[in-house]
Image 1 (cartoon, rainbow, N blue to C red):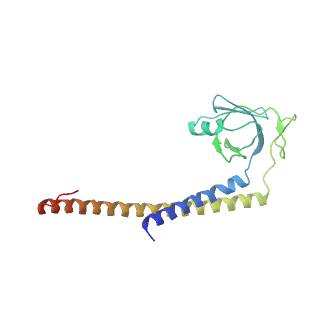
Image 2: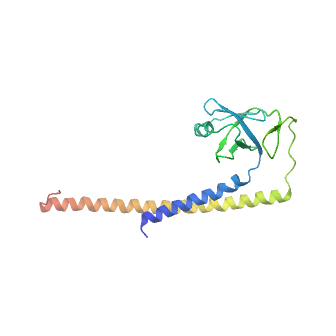
Image 3: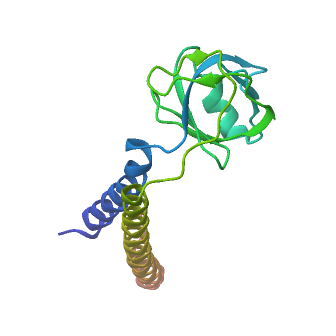
Length: 183
């Protein structure tokens, strides 16, 4: 198999590993579901139906949020990550205004009830989170291994390229010495 096909195959494998690492986070996000009310200031401010406002600091995240639409569902995680369930975008936000109403878990629509604290996680949830963490670590380790292999392949290709250039220079020297002109 040619080296270029191997590199492409390894890149595809690395992309699949990354996708598998992210998939559990997208499949069952932990956090509260809230509908988007508005996106303001070219994606720098996100207002949710529960009354909360989020500031988006990263330019790349602002570009993603700018395309978010009202009434799309967002998962708000405790670490400030906001996950758009329709688009699959994950951005970091900073809470500027706290929620004023509790949000219904099923619909994401606001309920006019004061915010309550979450119940502690069940043992099954904790086991599942640990398993996801182990799977994520395995995928990360595999990704690092594939990355190292790709680096070795790239280094070998660079060495081969250098050798080819050296041979080409030597061939040009010999052609000049022999009096042969290059077309």
